[in-house]
Image (spheres, rainbow, N blue to C red):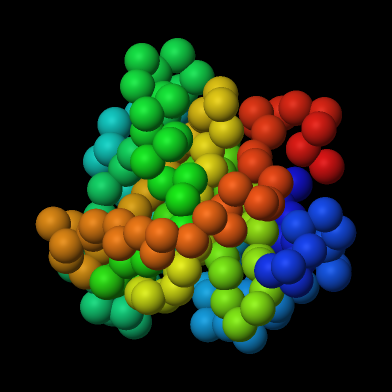
Length: 188
């Protein structure tokens, strides 16, 4: 189940509020300029489907976002628990960073945890299958895929080559909860 926990950035032990209703999550995130939507495939997607088949299943929503926001490129990324570089890939985005363009991810399958640091608050967003999150450029955040990652995600870019993390040097990400493996009972 998708979830938003909002914390004070000085109190990682107790959330100020917790939301699991998609409309509530979308409403809270829109207050800080973050897009949160639910998408449905317009055709079945078989396990192991090609990038082209995955994109085709969500073509209408992808084109709508590309037209609205000016995104120029789209691709699909997939990561499974047996990936040999999973620990290195996870570590790469666990520290607070920003990007010079929006970070837009749609979860076709699996889950990932985006945590945003905005105006003295920390917004911890567990995204699952069917969720799209659009983090505006310049927003401090970090991403966790858990120690045992599993997700298939569509990514949209303005300039794929320009999507580089600029680390803030702050250690705030170390203070807040990490993502537990997908399907774990601890995820609540």
